[in-house]
Image 1 (spheres, helix red, strand yellow):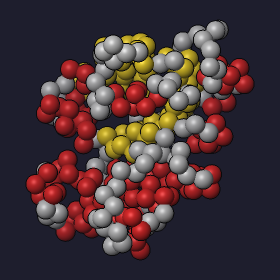
Image 2 (tube, rainbow, N blue to C red; image 1 turned 135 degrees about the vertical axis):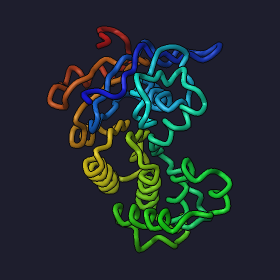
Image 3 (cartoon, rainbow, N blue to C red; image 1 turned 30 degrees about the vertical axis):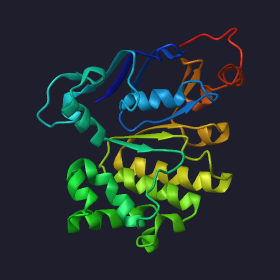
Length: 265
């Protein structure tokens, strides 16, 4: 399929507060590695979290083919109006990676990775850690993919920050995702570790044909890894194009603290 996720007129406004997304419309293709740029408060995190409804949009549509979540599905599904069952099926397909890792530090590395399969195993078996041998084998395989197989039975809090983010990637892969949303995944890491994490994320995305949307604040990393640059400013998309089209003028607009001469795309 040429496109599988369409965002149409997405808005988010808080009661008695600001509007943080203004009429965002974007279309994503399978296998794209899109980098979302912008100042803090530009709307990047809100946008990503609206896509799996960790944050509820105020208005707009998020359209996917129904067969993306159920093989027998036909037609399109608007995720903004999806049922709780449909939303649960969608969230199985969306791996989320956060800046602060969100690991359970007292558990082993492999048990943290297994948490990624809770959408399939259920909360009670997951809470009791009653995972099948095949799931445990797959968790070890995903740890091998991110270079942490030797650390599988260590406590998560024994790992460095870069290693913990690799665990978070392996956990996301346990979901058998179609999409990965990564919200500032390297913001707390030094440049060397940031590159290592993005190398892994890019590699597994290419190997598995994943669509990745990652927010970054370092322009050099964005240009090095992104197939597509999406610039947010003041809750609006003001740039959407290939890395070689992101010229100095576009960068200045994305990172401007004013509003003059900004033209939404």
